[in-house]
Length: 144
Image 1 (cartoon, rainbow, N blue to C red):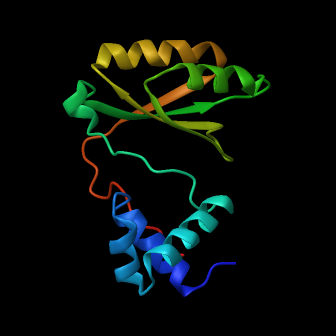
Image 2: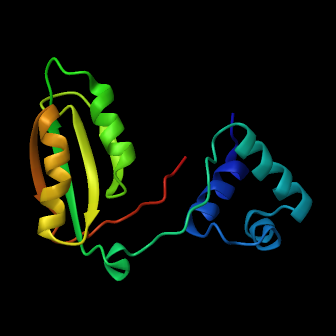
């Protein structure tokens, strides 16, 4: 179970994963060794699952972001998962309930590139695609 200090550590790391242990300790009121121990325990418990750089997809040549939803019935889902895992365009893939069996967030170079991505999926189900115009809320810090 996590306590209030762990919650503060998680908040700070979500805001800036590159923060030094010394600065993190100052912000949460712990010594550097104590905060290191806490962070390691949070990692070992599987609460902290990684540290990643956030990349602006447009600046690396992938200016179009879209959501591709798939409706599938009576098909082996493993094919969809395999296509998603093998496609570098797929940033996220979620399996859900309701009309959409899968929802994928993709980043592509062009509308033609998006069409190629969709064409790899259509043998396995019906796709519906939404191109993102803007993202007013890109990321939130999770309060735990």
